[in-house]
Image (tube, rainbow, N blue to C red; front, side, top):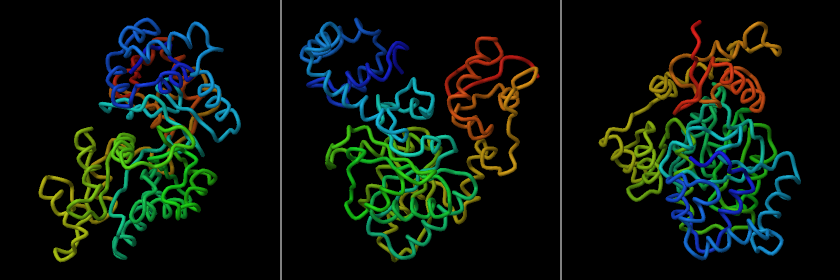
Amino acid sequence: MSSPALGVREWLALTSLPGLGASRLAELIARRPAWPDGWLAVLPREAATALRLWLDHPARSPLAASVDAALAWAAASADHHLLHAGHPAWPDLLSEIADPPPLLWGWGDIASLAPPRLAMVGSRRATREGLTNAGAFARELATRGWCVVSGMALGIDAAAQQAALDAGGVSVAVLGCGIDVVYPPRHHRLHERLREQPGGLLLSEHPPGTPARAGFFPRRNRIVTGLSWGVLVVEAAEQSGSLVSARLAGEQGREVFVLPGSLHNPQVRGCLRLIRQGAVLVREVDDILSELTQWQAPTMPVAPRIDADGGDGDPLLRWLSGSPTPADVLVGLTGLDIAECQRRLLMLELEGQAARVAGGWVRLSTP
């Protein structure tokens, strides 16, 4: 996604440049400019001038205050995180979408990104049946080791995330505002649970204090689906924003799952349209998992864990094969923390026993 030289400080500077919107920045990232000369050559004049000043005279640069404030925020708590493509907890799946966020602010349990993830979306004006279904599916997914990803919106989103947390499971909320802004305001308690309860995590591409804006939510949706192996649409009217999420999921190569509903219920007409367009109709959680068989192993509660010392050869190799396995899936399989898993993978790569490829890690040595 980017030059290996870019760390959190550089990404903070780039995302703070004047006159450079998120879409334009995504276009430049896709060109993989070298740091810093390549960036200076492709940035618009105002942004390039600001970056040059920050590089040469950081104390005089207006960027210094925002970069330092962000780093101070991250250092203020072990639950504060600044994630980028070089961070060990960065989900590899997110780097596969057309316009991944260059930086994510995180607040909560960073290990929530380790299990396999399924997005759940639906109507803000959900019916009682829709809310019941969302809760039931989220609870079962949570108890079977899956992370429920959503946007903390009214209706289906909130019902799914609350149910996952109630079950002692894992849930990640992607916000269309700053990480510390509660939107909608009535979800103050859910925001608190996601940032404080083990298994909960808040994510945003916007700095703290950024208010919610209408234009942020469609872009928020690309992260919700981009983080996930599939998306389950529980209820969606004809003009529902959930249809945008379903379209994004399809464009990103993710599976789209839909709960059917009554022909007479206007809140499910969007769902019926998705089914006609080829989405997978589901009646139970197994209908979803049977379509995602490559991610079944992390959900097995009896999955063996690796010993701490690794013995003569690192047992991490037992989970690697000729097919790519994402690092976050390896974390879920092994029980290692993210940093230790990344360290072991690096050592295996240096020893010529493993390699990082598109989609994750593969084993090079023979069993």
